[in-house]
Image 1 (cartoon, rainbow, N blue to C red):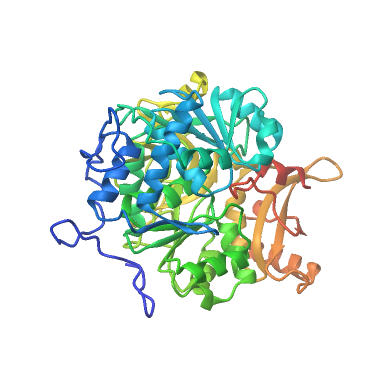
Image 2: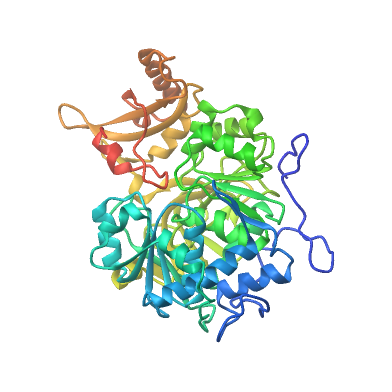
Length: 539
């Protein structure tokens, strides 16, 4: 059990319809492939109980959430009822723009009520939503619209010129037309009907769109919403990671809509100060971020801003033990590390409100099995191996890429590319990725192991290690460090202390030969470290 901090409890009991208090979901409990029978408005035409948009609207009525807040935006708050009514009308607008079941609707805009309405409207029609990062380059957007064969693009006004080969609907026009539109038709689908395709982060290679189903949303809710944080209707969520990212989609859309709770949606990436202000303004209880976000909050925020937070979650890349401890002290709440992927849709292995083991990514969540395998695919129980995961929410395929799909899907198992090892008690310690490894003097080195040691120094906010060729072309380990207090540290002193720390804790060949201070590390829009950029030694 995590320590209960003064004045709050990280665990909220789940109460069933008959008043029985629940416990965390069992790992053996099945996750329903189809959703319960729905009743309630907006009244669909030819509806299916498995259509997630129809199901969520009915659930909001049945559970008494219709008038409760669902989303808070800078302009106003929206109730669950308003969200589902708007989404039903938006579905008719999409129909009027040529969208039919099975068509792809690319969504490229900042987080907000229009994003939510476009996603749920697409779901209602039995079409496939393709959420993408609005801050990508024009070439990236053009590639994704062509790659997914989008029938329609829903986007912000300033991005319309990027999609010349596809029909475009601005978010402003969608809202204006939806204000007077009737409820659109609801497609008769099964739980296994494709719902959305989400592009991988693109840390290496060409981004690929992982295709997911209507029933997957309920699976994420049971595994990571209930199973990790025990989300319930009084919670208020802030996800620093945005809706276009698998992590953010679950945190800020799936969990609130399935639990009757609410989430704060900000159209831009918030600064640390804005995060603190948002937490205070809305009384945020659940905070989701990536390690770099917590590191930045530590540098710029005061602890009393986070008094409402009962739990925080970290994902996207490994959370160093020292960073997790400092973030916990800042927030006054547990910071739970977890592992997920776009291909699985959300987290499949995590620490939880009921079981938190810092330095690990916890254990498999309900509905998932994990196996460690060596490079030949044989199962291992000792030492480091690649994580293979099996569960109902593992993607159908990479959209339009059968060869790449076949490389990662093997007999129902997904090869994640993540490396891990078991620790005493059965939890997993993340050890980086297959493509993260560095070669120094003919020896393979995990930079993550070195980074975790260096991150323990109090003057280090973030660190990345890579093998950089020296003037003779020989690969030498270099540590790139973002100081916790820029300008308050002597670079030569810090370099000496970090190399000394590494020598005490690591084998000689793992000790960085130099330390370079920098203002930031190169990251993807989702906050993941761009290892290939670090290896170039400059960005």
